[in-house]
Image (cartoon, rainbow, N blue to C red; front, side):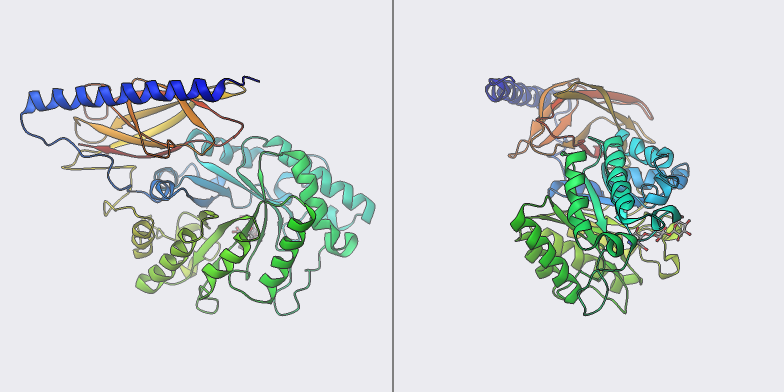
Length: 466
Ligand code: G2I
């Protein structure tokens, strides 16, 4: 191990900062001299997408994704523009990956994971042990056989995705609804007893120690008998050293099951146990300002809980929602942004361009888009490349924000002029000299990231052009 690393890194950063400051001064002087008038852009403006605004608040904003829709261009472009995390909606479930015992099929799930990796998005793994979408053979096993099948399933699936998953829903929906606080009947519960949940988490930690391990459930969003039962389990796990890192709150709401008034308080009491909390399957039936207000309340609650690390909506568009007729999502079935979208964006501190998406904003028609690619990887670091492409008119300047998840750090950059926020995690990249690009033309910049042990992928925010 290189024990000099922190020092070396500090020197590199120091040099990079010096270079950046110098480059900015030279750049600004050049423009002043040439133009005489300052129309030059200010520092990075408010982010204009859900993902970039959430990243500016240290969170991710994700969507459930179905592999079968990735080929639809509006679906993919809305996903790629707005979101910086994904959860496979069905593709990682037991019936999808192991319909026959010990014969694994990762095709559709791999498609989602590689799409996400190519775009620098986080991936939530959903789900390893759940009573539903279980192939028939699982229910027919004896207790001993079921135990080894469960542990084999967890191990093989997690190892296949090692280093690529931010957090796994290790166990999903293990508790009954209502006031009993009891565990839900399932092959696991009925044959292995209460201990199966603990066993699943221990097996999961052994399979991939780099992924966060979550318990995920619904109707646990406020303080009630069901969430009390989950709370008691998490408290017991923490007390006994059973590995659990996070609790997911699905947050499927409608008029019968509205956002509870103690939503934030409930998230906070779990966070106080020493776990992260995440909003994992958010959707709210309804429309217009009522729906928008409820969405805003959920986002506010997450932002007000330090350990609420991110939010995921359960689908990109109403068109493909599991409860489409309730129009519960942020984009309508024609991919138009709904009032709820605007409220979520502004609650996240972002500012909208008003229409269309497309991954870009800017004054007087100047737009640009970005694509991110990991171009090389080593055991301790990787190279990332961002390609900036001008939209339907020529541009004279651009800026792109790249956010790294701590403890990852950029050690060097090329073909751009970087500046950093005070945390050192948010890099704003501007052109090295002349930022002019003809309509549709591209340029690229690159950087090396020291992983410091974290498998995270960087978040590339929207591109600002003038
Ligand atoms: O039910 C909503 C969610 C509740 N929490 C756990 C989530 O995993 C669950 O997701 C839904 C998916 O959104 C649906 O898409 O889980 C359902 C299954 O329990 C999914 O529905 C299934 C249909 O029932 C199947 O007929 C279909 O083959 O989707 C499958 C794939 O399209």
